[in-house]
Length: 115
Length: 110
Image (cartoon, rainbow over all chains, first blue to last red; front, side):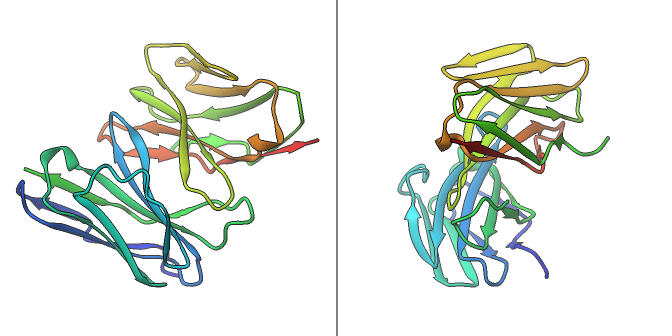
């Protein structure tokens, strides 16, 4: 199994540009999570999906952030327009199901730098 | 070592105190975190401690930090069945990356 796949691994962009981060969860996993990691705040949950449906997006910082999961094998996190304070590492994670204590499988992360 | 280490399992009775221990790797870690993962939910930040502190208390949670031994612990007083979850310890590294432990699965028996 290839694990959770994220792309790109690194992204450098200028303020105001649109940024799209991509994630492919482990096949068969029903839950997908998007996290943001910064030094000051640690790991923050942004949004998560169950069977492609967004369940809780209360962690999405503002309207500039949006996430979609058009099918079970693909999700995107979009920032439009991007700002320097969005610079962080963005992680995607998946778990098989929600009714047991099961550890999350994290992708390698996308390191975003907004200049 | 290179890994953040935690015991994988802990079982306590309702009303008892739970103590979850963690050994981290980087003595220069600025922040140390405890996260909680409940079934079907994402990681939730429970608490964190800055490296110049040795104790932090927040309601039923007490975090103890021993920098000399690189040891972090989380104590949950009056543990309830709703506290059953996986608890992750995490440290920050020099390059601002985070390193997580494998998680301690806490089971609370009535």
